Image: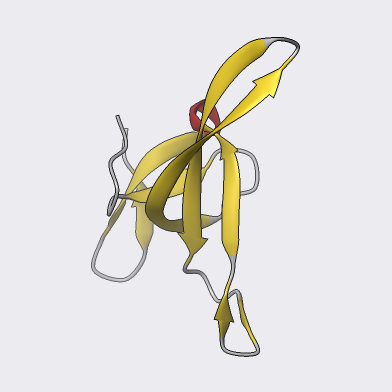
Length: 73
């Protein structure tokens, strides 16, 4: 379970960011939980952070290592 404040990596795009909230999406009559994530890998345009929202299952927990972010197994 990813919690607010955790760092997450998107499994498809590789984007990494900090979880800032939860949301929902209804697809084909099925209620899906989403994560709202503030991207941290350089996507700041005009002093604005980039936010990404996708279904919960698209994200995995990431943790910072000494020089980079590594995917937690």
